Image 1 (cartoon, rainbow, N blue to C red):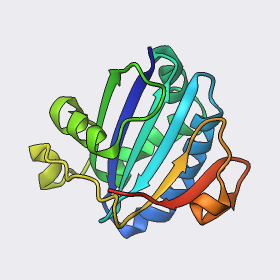
Image 2 (cartoon, rainbow, N blue to C red; image 1 turned 180 degrees about the vertical axis):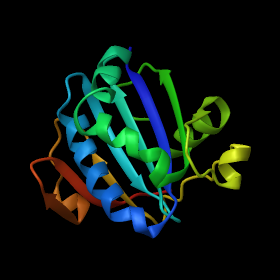
Image 3 (cartoon, rainbow, N blue to C red; image 1 turned 30 degrees about the vertical axis):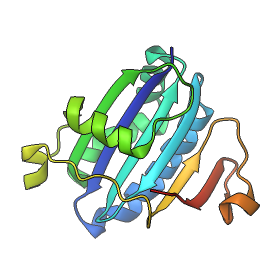
Image 4 (cartoon, one colour; image 1 turned 135 degrees about the horizontal axis):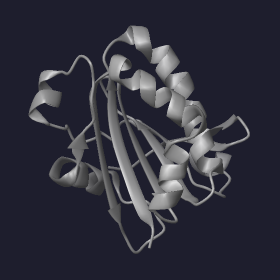
Length: 169
């Protein structure tokens, strides 16, 4: 059964944002190409918060990705770059990613904090704001799918199927 992984990270300062964005983009491309990857989505939320939702063939595929390449290297820098970090995992029947609303509910209800060096008050209380998707831009990357410029509005030429779309709430 497919294994879902949700993360939410908030970059603590504009100073860390350029490096975070570059490395996050590379990690998303790595995830898309990883063995066992079924779906990869990244949401750019307000206030320097970023969500990922990935669906994997199984937990072993996710852990193999997590411990390799760009993702492994970026994980070591996140405690300094971020002041909020949380993750949640579960198994589901569908290969499609859950909605962002479900991702938030699962993260808030059954997720856990990740270590950060400079935790915000929200991190200390484990309060996670619901992602704002109706007016925000979502970056969608579905494994094996090519983004349609007609449907998405614009695409990035990166070798990965990365599309910028306006996502309904």
